[in-house]
Length: 245
Image (cartoon, rainbow, N blue to C red; front, side, top):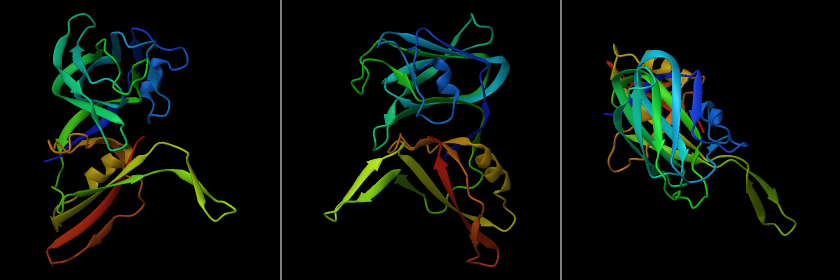
């Protein structure tokens, strides 16, 4: 069953061992991966998120990363830390890396990401993080998708028809996944709370070993929810979610 993480926690202070002057660590707290954090090199680096108070946690998800893995630790006070697992990078078909560590049941003020000294997987001279999302609550999806799910990758681009009749295209932004779910539910089962959470933004982990990269920060941007009634006591609904990238 897929996991839904919701209610984003925004750090009051975020620090790094070192950062490139043009790509400060504060960039990781913005939505999307276009304005990323970059280290000054590929040496060991530690990112520390201070949430301002001790809070219940659900997960940390990193998007647009180029290191293979990083231990995740939490701390209630900034000094005593507890290891919570290792975040492993998985790349989608476009090569954008992401990873997640569940922090369900953990209460802490600080979340540490310890990037080891290693050559970045994309061959860059520095480590990078596009965005970091810390969520407060983990839930199972209220209803399992009826027919699996679909993924469409949108490639923002402009196209120009040349004098010779050929078409020239140029990318103008990040590739964005569009994730489609269909739900079949009884008349007394509701998706309202689920939709409200997705309008604000959530992280979904499909938790499939065959597709470990199917982890997304997503948002429901639609203004309508399509439904059909194949039987008198049931309803089918489809929703389209856009990756926050």
